[in-house]
Image (tube, rainbow over all chains, first blue to last red; front, side, top):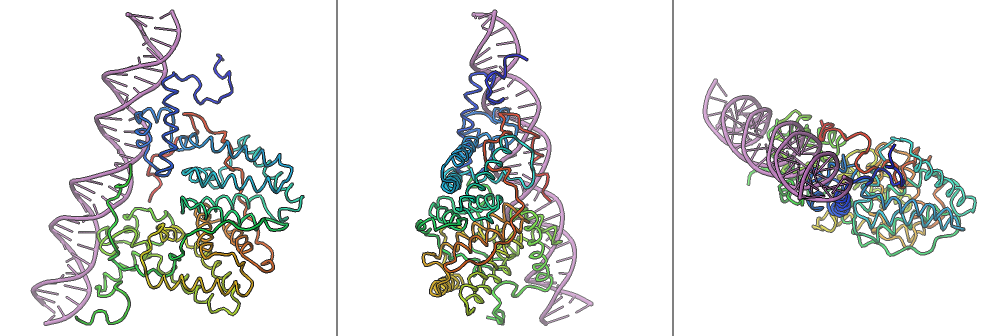
Length: 238
Length: 238
DNA sequence: TCGTAAGTGGACGACATCGTCCGTTTGAGC
DNA sequence: GCTCAAACGGACGATGTCGTCCACTTACGA
């Protein structure tokens, strides 16, 4: 009942002491860096060390790894939200749609660690209703409808196709971190196949990825004598 | 110098004693089952238990997890190789190309665990030359060229695009195991965008995937008080 | 039938991570 | 300054996995 939730800023850093608030920020910065470098499975202790705080402090601020991941990438998620708003406001619905896809994919590509956070946001069917997300879903459907009505998006495009495309792209950048060409190329192909009207124009340059590893019977499959033995388990962790 | 490598069957199960050979088979069967259920990161001990052998036996046959993974999915890889041969032999190069993509994606979709093995086969640039793979790569290029010459595959299609597409699909089925509709839908879109001539026909039914989780600012991001705490770490492993 | 080398399985030591407990430090109000 | 609740950090017990070691078992040739 006290003046505690005066500014609607969530329960995030509300009544924290100055040092605590400072540490919270340092943890978030460290988390993004560590997750980018080692994936969101990186040991919590690594994040803590990077932030210059103890593990206890980390756990006090973020009860679970999941909470930390979500908080760390909240900013990226807001970028997505903004992109959606802008897409809806665009006079050309196809341009809006295209930019939305490109923005979301660029985030997945550039913010390493975000892709993993992204899929973590798709825990199969868990549909706990949340106003912001409900709203986003409605906006997406509206955008799609508008682009279809404008004759730019194929009429058999289904809203779930957007999720499919984003998850596929997510998988690609996870498998090939750093291969920007591959990412752009996939996005271009997808947008091309979603397009109802004329082509979107020429494709970006192809990736330099070799398909030398097409999963054809591997020559190096030997019963019990593969190449070098793998290094001692947790050797390359920070 | 003895009659040991008489039948060219690799060093796989060559001079093993009868019981050892039997156990090797049981391990491979168990590995496929366990990898499908828990991913290729599943504890080696789980595989051993499932196979009804000791860990030591497992390690004696397969020095590393990697060797086990490769051996376990060798059959699937051979299916890919066969599909490639058939594609090349097809009188209609586009049909061959399409079937190859569909076969590879169907394998990724149906054989859970294979996708992970698949990406494991793309360790960024490690191009240890292996005759079977070199051959496969050459065949793929030939197939692509033929389909382009027939006017069915867009001329700016680059061989690496095939790898990009397969990796993206791989990521999708990994994120959404069991969602066959999503997989088919993505494949249809990709083939549509690769096509130079007329459309491939109507798309398959869309996935029932909700986009309720589009990564828009998450309502449930709270500083240190997310929902339920995650379960004790390794609780759901076999 | 018997000897032996190949095969086997489980115990074990090493290691990594998790998340809590608790004694110490520090910010902020008086 | 002084007090004290809030915040801190590191040690610690629990848990889980890895891969090896070694004493026991078994297939198979003589």
